[in-house]
Structures are given as structure tokens and as C-alpha cells.
Image 1 (cartoon, rainbow, N blue to C red):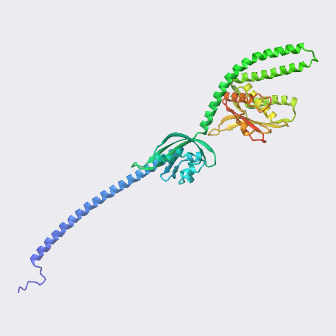
Image 2 (image 1 turned 180 degrees about the vertical axis):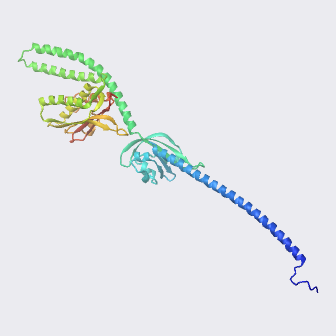
Image 3 (image 1 turned 180 degrees about the horizontal axis):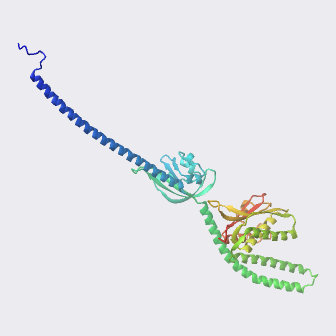
Length: 423
């Protein structure tokens, strides 16, 4: 046995094997490092893509919210009522205008049956349920509907089917408008056309009547002159003359009403015109009746408007005399002059004169006919006073309103465009 040998010596073949393993280990380690770096790069790439995707998703959601809010704002800004009903007949959308028209809070309407909100006393064929069942949209229709607080409204409406992105039916949309103002305008146009035709006919008749009236009055005057003072027939002749005079006044009023108005506009202070008119009226009243008192409440500032003062005085005198006749036992007539602040920034846009009496008031059925020619509740009235007053105010681009309850007097308000420094 070699004394220089050691039991712990490693055989050369093992050392070679170990060296091979070490080389393999280093190679494997390097491969693992490269794989790790590749994996890390892929992870970073995927993470970046994920972040980009999340950012794009957030942008998409934000854009969707923006578009949704934009559409909701448009929907809420519409003057037309819009509702959507689902397949079960329940309301899923009810915009602001729909709530205002139907006098129903929008939040409370959501989820309620369509018929509960829109189906009161309405024919089934005029409902969105009919469209849902038949599949036939209604391009335009009109119906009367009872709002939540009992108001009966004329509605113009249309219906259409609602489908999702895949074309599946999801409900019905109904768009509707309150036609009350439109109907009132149609009635006003019809009334104006009727009055225009009536005016032409009345003017022709008045001219035809005035000629024989003049002859009757002339012959009656001759007959009165030829009769003795004590002759009982003189009373009959005087009755004829009085009747002719009454007819002549009616014909004159009729001709004045049918004659085209040509106001001579100029800037006036309404307070001054009202003051002059009330003074004339007070002088007239004091000669016959001391039981009427005029109360004035005028604006401290000038109330300017462009108007024909003579025509305006005619209207005011007519209203004052009507107020007096409404108080046979006497009372107070309040006359108020001022300005209305109606502009978005509080600017003055209109001026007004308000005449209020303490008379018997005006029944509702009479109020609707007040400004109709030849309609009168007085025995000797012609029915042209208020009709002429309205015609004059209309020619001034103004309006005349009446507010009254039986037994509580009446209040007539004249509203005219405001004028500032000749504007």
C-alpha cells in the first residue's frame, strides 16, 4: 500500500463527474436566469397591457357615463313628456316634462303600472299597451287624459316600440305634449275669424239701417211739430224719436267697432292718462251719484308705454262705468297703476292698470262671454263696450284679463308693453 495515499482522496473519475455536473449546473442556472428574465419581460409587457386595458376601460366607462348623462340632460330638458314602459306594463322612465304635464312626481311614477298614470278614462287604443300588444306604433294621435290632480288635458302623443342591441323587444316609448295652449289659440283664431265675418256683415247692415232711421226720425220730428202741445199722441211720437235715437246709438257703436283701428302711438306716462281719466269719471259721477269713491294706488315712478292716449281713455272709462253699474248701492272703485317685473334679470317688461270694484261679481259662464260682441247682461246695453275695449288693447299689443267671483266684485287688468326712453 502506498504510504503517500490517503483514504480521503477522491478518485479522478468522480472529480470529472463533479466537474461535468458543475458545468451543467452553471449552464442550467444561466438558462434559468435567461428564462426568468424572459418571464419577467413578458410579465412587464402583460402588466403594461393590463394597465393600458384598464385605462381604456376607465376611459370607455367615463365616455359612456358622459354620453349617458348628456342624453339624460337632453331628455330632462325636453318640453315634451317622455315615458318608457317595459313588457310588464310598468313605467321605467318618466322625464321631468312628463311629471309636470301629468302632475305626478317623476320618482313616484317609476315602477308604477302605466294604466295607473296614463290610462285614466282613456280608450285602450290610445295607450302604449295597445302598441305593445299589436306592435303597431302610433305616429300621431290626440286624446284627453286626466292628470294626477284631476285636471283634464288634451294631449298630442306618439308611441314606438323599444328594442335592445340584438333587436329583442324591451318595451314601448310614448312621447306626449300638452295641447291646452294650442287648443286655446285655435279657439281664439276661430273667434277672430267669426268676429271678422260678423263685423263685415254688421257694417253692411248698419249702413242699410242708418238711412231709413234718418227718415223715420225726420218724419217723427215733423209730426211732433204739427201736433198740439196737449195732444196725447205727442207721447207716442216722442217714444218713436227716443227709439230711433237708441237704434242710432247702437248703429254708431256698431260702425265704430267694425271700423279698423289706427292707433296714434306715442310714448305716454300711464299714470298721467289714468289720472286724467279718473278725474273725468269723478266729475261725471258727482253729478248723479255721490256713493261712489275712487281709490288710487299709483307707482311713484313714471310708468311709460307707447299707446294712443285717447283710445286708452275710452277703454278706461268703459271699465270705470261698468264698475259703477256693478255697484248699484255704491262702494269703492280701486284703480292701481304700476309695472310688472317679468324679465329673467328683473327688467321691467310690461305695465298695467288694474280696476277693482266691490260689486256683485261675474259668474263663470258670463266671464267666458264678456268680450263677445253683442253679449250683455244689462237691459239697455249694446254688448259692444268690452268687445271694443279688447279690440283696442289687442291693437296695442297688450292684453286684458278679468278675475271675479260671484259676490266678491270684479277686477279687470290691462297689460301693455313697457317702453323706456322711447324704445
